[in-house]
Image (cartoon, rainbow, N blue to C red; front, side, top):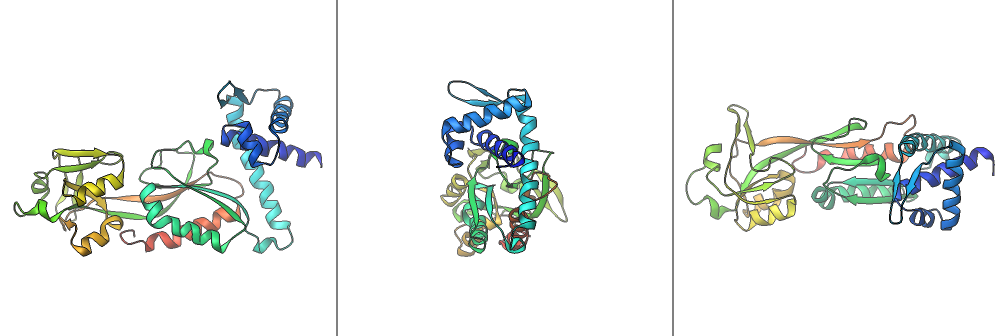
Length: 303
């Protein structure tokens, strides 16, 4: 093994330990003994003359030097991978390697998973990790290649590729609408409401193209951070709710839910793919981003 490749091996081991948060887990991933992974980490620290990972009895944490090295190490490994892609025999047709994607829970389950799985089937040498999480993530620490995020992305270091706009509307079970006509946001504010805490919470904003913007403050019957719980509550008639059209299209068609104010909508949310800047973007990531950009706007209620 050459010295250059040996250094890349040390960096790869360090990155895997940082991402997994465990030397033993990283060693399993790399088919190494725990002792060997520990020796490689120690050798890297010796070369840099700095502690990279602070070890305690129960956890690992990157030092400041380790955090700075992690970014450079990922970039160097990505550039090396680009060289392999360009110069391996058959490299032009080769799409291989790990691809870790984190997406939103509901949309990830109902629509995005099919896009990701179809991509993996088209490129079977890609090893896909598909995780769903609605919470903000610390991108640099997750080992994530692509974060599919609905709404603002709270990390200015990432590159964003907009994938579409999500239409959202106020829906309710028909039984809630028997008390009278609903023609304005003030009418809707009389209904018990269901709040999705990551977004508007208890103060939904509604927009009409010819009547401006209004913020309502209804009585909140249920507040939750889970869109499935919100949806179930709406189906049971517990309250009205702002929900994305892609989530409730079938229920609207079947009459299980009603579009309470057809002329009013909650502000659209942007869905984006976020990823780290790099001098070289692995081909599997660029192709996956292309697949998202092509397929996401085809989801009903996203344009």
